[in-house]
Amino acid sequence: MDVWLVCSFLSLLVSVTGVLGAADDGWSIHVQPEVRAMEGYPVVLPCTFSHPQHSQHSSLQVLWRLGHGQGATVLFRCTSRTGAPTCEPGPKQDQRYRLEGNPREHDLSLRINSATLQDNGRYFCRVEIQGREHVSFEDKMGTRLRVEAPPKILDLSVEGSEQVGYRALCRVQGSPLPDVQWLGPDDLLEGSPVGPLAQESQAHYHTVSQLRDVEPGQQYTCSASNPLGKEQATLYVLPPRPPMSVARASPPLLLLLSVCLGAKVILLVGTGVWMVQAGALQGVSCWWK
Image (cartoon, rainbow, N blue to C red; front, side, top):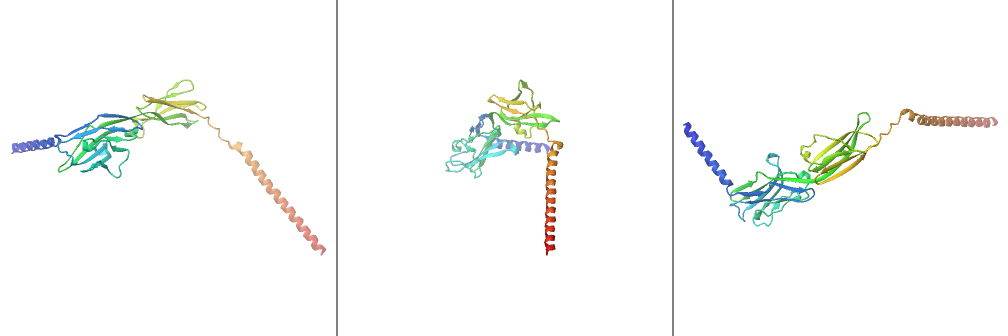
């Protein structure tokens, strides 16, 4: 009985394996393992395919994703219907992405306009043939997109106080990740990175360097460089203003109060004199009557 079960299981396994192998038979999809681009310029991710079941009368759906598995993001989707000259994207499609190739010619290449550093990642193209039997195929390795950019200093600032001391911060982005150096009035200074960054994905092209013990009244230069270029920014640390003391502020305040009180006393005295004079005149006039 056990031998019969084992034989039945093996025969079923062989039949399932044969079906899976037949499903992949004839598929051919070609992508580039890696594509490099410059920030701000368009880039094309090549992808071509072939399959014996595909014909000019089949309906096709093209799908491009960033990442693989449950965390993947669908960036582009279009449908090439029978007799239609183009592959029609959905109504909410991001216009940065468009199909560079023609699915009718087995070309699924994707164009990304104005590439950014956030576009770095691995892309996967997928084709679905919607005929009598719905079949689909996707390259499992994908294409690695590397967007490169020269250094750019995003922010240069100083924080701290007289009690704890001051430090300068230089926030830089670029790909490859720039090397950051600090220059003082006379010589090279030693800075240190600040981390980890809040977003793990930005660590490949975004860095923050700090310079401790900066002195008021001095200037410091942040210099960022990578193989694509170099950028510098200079910071002048202003000396702190002395706080206004209460003792120095008191005399004008007391003087102002004295003037106000003096004016009120003069006003009251003048009013009293006028009332007395008015009463005396009234008394005289009455006495003459």
